[in-house]
Image (cartoon, rainbow, N blue to C red; front, top):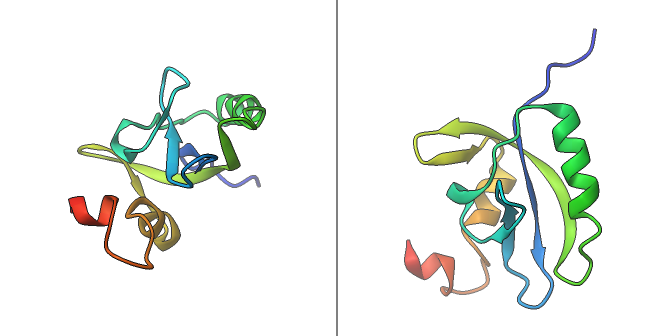
Length: 99
């Protein structure tokens, strides 16, 4: 029996800055997870991932990340994605300074 599809967002790192970015519903890379498109259809997720993976001049390391629907948009279901959305851990700056 096949495993049920878990909702996902498409995420990567911005090529120029290294920031974590997410693909929104309009195929624009955004830095706020709340603006990311939560994809609930596996075929749509796979097709959008293929397209996003071709944007080598904008992003690197494109992949699908498991998420769940939250009050303010997608929410991580794994520690790794919660950690990534908070920004770099080497010193207090960027997204960490805004929290």
